[in-house]
Image (cartoon, rainbow, N blue to C red; front, side):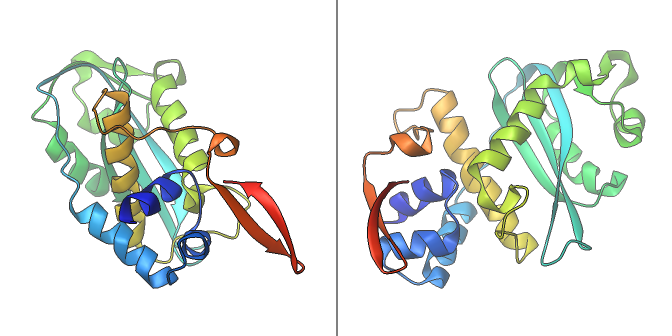
Length: 210
């Protein structure tokens, strides 16, 4: 049941939608995602040829409480290396940078934001949007697959903690799939999922694909 919950979560279904499908309470779904997120271990490679950085804008509770997701991606493997939530400040990026400093990197790539300029080594730091296409693609995937990050939606994060666990669960599934693990999660299009769901609209049951 928990694995099914994770699959639906990673396919972009909000917690309330998952609770209706699995016939459990929204709080149970939240507890499952939190439990799964706590078990995720962020393993880093010893060497990375190209590491890209960028930030994903979001908010918690209301649009005035801005939060940024700092993202690090390995270009060659599309591996999501690390995520960190905070403001768009040097101190918040440094929490992620402390973990990534152990990795030997040939080239760092960023959009040239000042935090990257003063933190990343100048000798192998490539600046400009032309160097961050992989991490930009990853941010697009996050907005597509995780309901809380979509634009113009009623789904949003109620706490930084759940935003963190949601990201960790997605990161674990994505890396397992992309790196060819036997237990990989299949990121298929929503309309190709086999299991049909019956959604009642105005009292009429209609068949929909998740």
